[in-house]
Image (cartoon, rainbow, N blue to C red; front, side, top):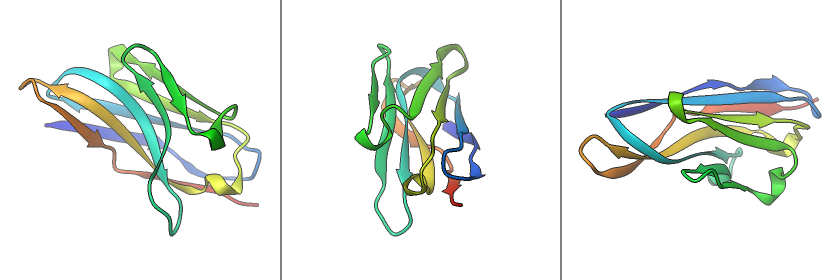
Length: 120
């Protein structure tokens, strides 16, 4: 089995910064991509950022220029640096990874979620 464990999050004032991290462990042969989703209160889950196996990155329009995704491939860890946070960034943030397991299958796995609250 594969586990994704998230760290970071919390409360911050508008304009502040937070850093999330997510470490994958378990029966991992390789990781195709790692990224972040979020679910604002009363809304559906949306993709925030993604880092592909070739280093390509994707950002939602709403976070471009404010959030930065990075990966430590040796440690199977992905980070999300969030700067200039806005109240609209308040959400539960989830880590996601597409993993080729030791059995040769590719599945996506999710972290446990972490609350990010931006308020004055």
